[in-house]
Amino acid sequence: MVSKGLAGLGRALRGFYSRHKLMSWLLLLLLAERLWALGWLGITYSLNNDDFGYVVSGINFANTGTVTMHRVLSAQIMPGMPWLLGLLSFIFGEGRLYLLAARLLWIGMGTATAFFVYRSVSIYAPKWCGVLACLPLAFPDFVWMDNLLLTETPFMLFLTICVYATLQMAKTKEKKYFWLCLAGYMLALMFKANIALYPLFAAAYLLLMRYPFKLLWRQGVTLAAAVLLFVVPWSIRNYVHFKAFVPLTYGAGNPLYIGTYQGEGWPEDSELDYDENVYRPADEKFAHYYPAVGKIEPYLQRYIWLEIDGIKAHYRMAQWWQKDPGSMLKSYLWLKPVRMINRCYYDKELLGISRQHVDVTRVVQFWCCVVALGAALLLRKRRRVLLFLSAVYMGNLLLYALYFAYERYAQSLYSVRLIVTGIGLALVLELLAKLRQKVVKSRDTTT
Image (tube, rainbow, N blue to C red; front, side):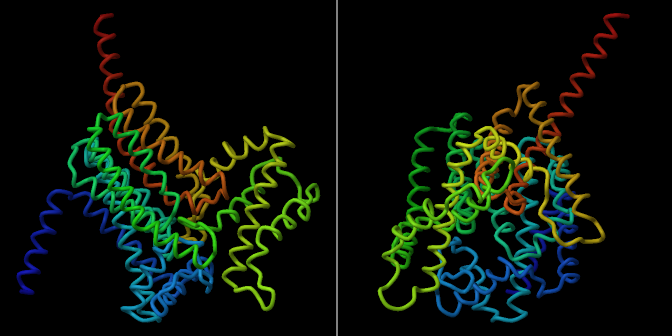
């Protein structure tokens, strides 16, 4: 049985290599880079921030079956990290073997993202365009990111799967890609709540691509049912603990508040009356959480603190709008998005390559996306595909900009830009070929 299994695996690998030779070598390179970084950084490497919190939450879930963050009961995060890391902790314990298994899984997911980028590009362009589109995933920022136990690596993989499946749904109308899209969407939702709006972008694109409306409606109902199967019990759990309706996560008030100190022209704290407009209303709103005798539970105290941040944020935003609406619009629609477009998430240099060097590639790659869109518009070809991808990217980017503009959050959207670049490369070459033909014809007519 074992020998037959190994023989079957060997045939499958040889078949994969014969179909995707260039990509096979790139996948090996990406895997080797990440494994080298694991050896260099070490199994216990940590930012001692969210990544450490997730590691502990996995152990807590394995031991208690509860979703925690920062060692307290929580709905501040989606349950994907505690569930997945909890499963690994249940199997491998709480020590180095647990950390090694988790890091190898993250490395595998980061490598797999490249394959789905390549497959997405290959739907509309030659395979070599897909290979070239994946090259930025070999840059040190992604190698480093895939060695961190954060939500970005799994979310990026599942978002890329969603995009690939959506493109295939529009191209082939085959139902199997809907199920793949549904799986990718639900898995992405388990790690980051901002994927929630993705079906709106996908539905609009599929309708533009003349996807059968009745089929889309049935699949939309199926998707809604799958989401409700998670949201309903999760919301009940959250209401039992926090006495509030929390369908996905709470805590958005904190990044919303911090984000009011980004950009330019925001109101200074000395200009504002927090006591009258924040703390006094908050005391009234959350009074029922405090018992007459004794201390409030730490997990409820954390929930209240984060909700107060939300009140602060809305107060500051209202005052900012009254004071200088122009600077507020500029900050949220330009300065904060541009920060995330042009910067990478990369805090530990690998092989002596600095963050500034990688940031340059970010700028160049973004302009490649702009050129790709221009080529699509001039050729009147692949316009809907690239506009859909651009809408997914920019829609999520503006959503992040509404809160705290942080390059870490935008890092997980980068695969969408790579798909735009890969498809656009074929379009640019086609446009250059047509321009060359026109030049040759004009020379022939003049002679």
